[in-house]
Image (cartoon, one colour):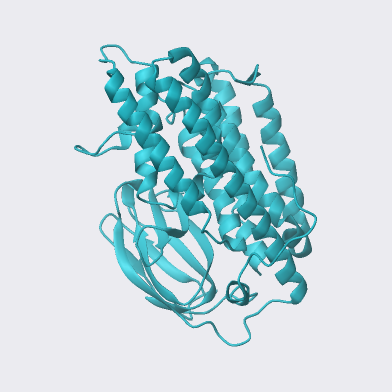
Amino acid sequence: MKLARPLHFTAAVSVAALALTGCTTNTPSAEGDGAIQVTSTADACTLSAGTAPGGTMKFSVKNEGTQVTEFYLLAEDGLRIVGEVENVGPGLSRDLVVIAPEGKYFTACKPGMVGDGIRAAFAVTKAPEGETVSADRAALQATAVSLYSAYVKDQAQQLVEGTNEFAEAFAAGDVDKARELYPAVRMHWERIEPVAESFGDLDPMLDAREADLEKGDPFTGWHRAEKDLWAPKGYTAMTQAERQKLADKMVADTIDLNNRTRELTYTPDKLANGAKELLDEVATGKVTGEEEFFSHTDLWDFQANVEGARIAYEDLRPLLTENDAELDSALETNFATLQGLLDQYKKGDGYVLYTDLTPAQIKELSSAVDALGEPLSKLTAAVVK
């Protein structure tokens, strides 16, 4: 449930963060439109510059390899994701627009979209003089990030409460109740998935799918419980002690996640990029039925990803309408179209199983996701200019 929006907002964003939220794209490499050119191949991730001035920066990622790739800008710890673009197919290009303050970073391409990727150090220097925004836009930005921060905290807290209830039922062997809670509780995770995934140590422990694990990787979290609850043929059920151990770890990891979200700060580019990442999640895992391999409850996740993207868009909307009313109209229309399609598959408090969908229905949903993803990919550039 989304928090009621307060009538007044305090200064939730630091002055330094706002000062870096500039209107002008930097020109770190003096190439083309000022973007840093990124070339991804099977064994290289080449950037046209290894440093850039702080503020708004653009990476133009071109995939010259044979596998789908991703590109990341990571914080100094190498875990926290500052910005990312996913699903860059062979021969295709995509842009990443981020706002980054002075500091040390890492860049990474991930051919095949697995593992740590091909990493390199990247430095951001002091922002140029004069890269500031008007007081009005600064206020709109502060409001947007304050609203979204409250939303994330609300969802994280509800995730803790729901996980506690689920873990109790799962550990006790109450299969019916655990099955009922599983998709509903996971929606809190899916609504804030880019934030949750930004904690690179917690994400694999809580949300890794068995098919994505390397040999020897621990299999824990939601999908480990999913496999036990919707056991495939030939599967050996977990013992009560094993269930209890898994349940305890899920609760502890989720509490850790919730505590960490309390310390996070946001910028408009993170909100906009996060909205697009949520649509990418739908395109790569939910509309394909890969995410919930055992339970087939993918439409719950699908709905939650779309809701999370829509919230970020709505929080940014005052900034968008000022700069690009046409894009705002396209997003409003395409969000409504996609929601209308999803509504057709509601069943009780949830949705039909993915396996109940026909190929034609899946294709229709996929096309609507693609139609929304295209204008959503322009949101960041529109709100930070």
